[in-house]
Image 1 (spheres, one colour):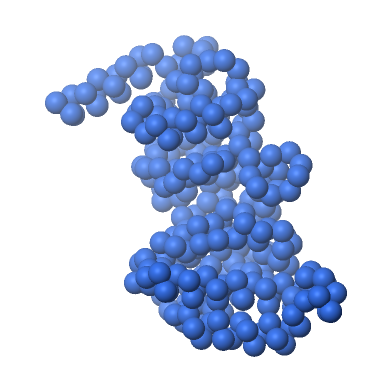
Image 2 (cartoon, helix red, strand yellow; image 1 turned 30 degrees about the horizontal axis):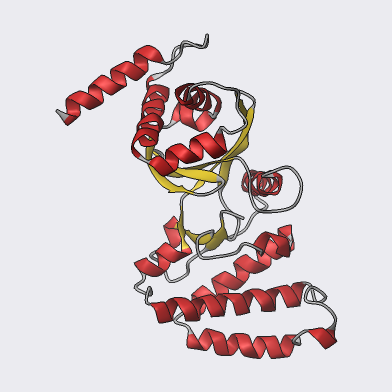
Length: 281
């Protein structure tokens, strides 16, 4: 019965979408419209995100029309099938694609005071250019495509990138998910970040009289690292990533830095030299 219902839903989608005057949907596009529509029907949180965030600035059309237009406009949604939803946030959604990449679709971000999502868009564009002109390094996020599309007057941004295991999931994978582990590791990462910022931008924390000196911060960082269960290669990898982000983009790109917006490149997860990247500034 379940298989029969799935076939019926797919038939209904293929017969009813595409009435807006465009070319008929391809089989990949049809599958993606069906996937997103079904998820919206079955997941109230995802439906609310689509209605109240992603398409909030769009002209008044049924949600199904917005979904179809989104699939038509975003190149990845016309070439690759969606496998699953990797995560839904306040400002965007991450889709796991059949080719193994992650497609982030978003309308804004938390950085800067200008147009919503503009700093994030610049970040992804810069990372993409580094990949294609070979100027990147181990901390460069592999971004394959990014841009902005017009969905019924709602300007929606997208970025297709390599899949990254978020750091909190990485800790679960490596068996370090106790409350004590998390507290000590978070303290160690905060200490590393402060040392890197102070080293790169000595004036960032204010005049010397009002801040801890760099040698003092280094000493505190060493103590925090020793209390944590981070390995030597992990500490080095985190320091390399943080220095890269600060040097290339500035410390403001680390203001919302937490275990859910940076992670390990999937191919290096099982190695003793994990490569860390920021994927959601």
